[in-house]
Image (cartoon, rainbow, N blue to C red; front, side, top):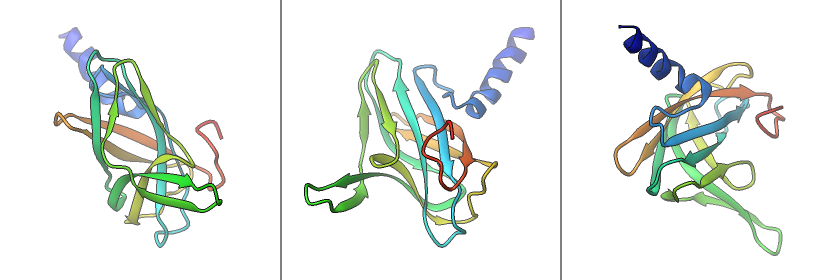
Length: 150
């Protein structure tokens, strides 16, 4: 009985501390910036680490705070022109990690249903090719935050 209670506690707490229910996948340092209302999109950032012995492929994300959520990639050309586009599937090799951070890959949260308010959190689910899902609780930092420690 005690083992079941401990297992249940770990399953319930794992998303709150940014860890995956799947022990092979760790989601580290999730964070988002506060939004300016709901008329502009928001973004979330985190690192996905594959501790398993086989590649994993992140195929999508979803969250109740946005009508549409996708992994996007920002880039800047040699002429200084910045663009952003959906990144598509992201495969993470065994023992490797992929960082979603400002200026690169990021979770784009479009059609916000509610403002992202500093000090609050929201649920985000990572969806993998094998049908696995990893829930993460994302803390919302200030509008000028540059990283998870701000």
